[in-house]
Image (tube, rainbow, N blue to C red):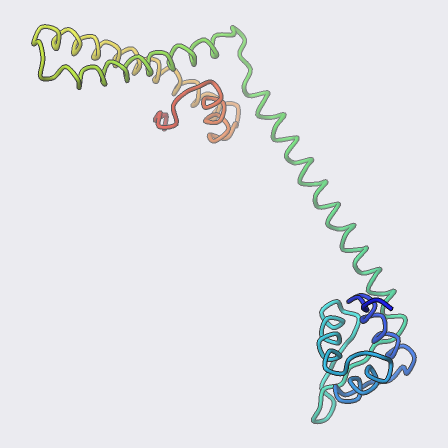
Length: 204
């Protein structure tokens, strides 16, 4: 005969409760569980698991704690779990509906009639990348030819100016979406991020 599983042990102890239909002290249920074929040392632990699962109730009567479980309680517990699961499902459905509504509103606020926003975002990303490359090149030329250094410095400043103007354009787009279309700022940031803009771009 194979080993008794944890579920089988719980059913064995529940059967004791449901057959006797009376309260037990911990000593009494331990003795009754052992008589039913359970290891007496394990009965308190099995009893605790049944309590945790709400199949066994307990209360202090007089000076001691007593435990009980009746057949109808198991069905009531199953119904309670079913009701809780249904309530959780309804809450999840409501959250999903809210998320879909928010997504629809966000998409509506992202209308781009002339199709220029994507091009602007791409151009800004290119300018930012080029400026960063020039700045890195500038660092490597600081101790070299003064004329080349001056040329790179001027070019870097021009690139910086272009990037700043594109940043201002994007700031205007973000302000319009947030203030006029009620799109959340974080959603606009995610849009910019998806277009390849650097994370450290300051549009606030």
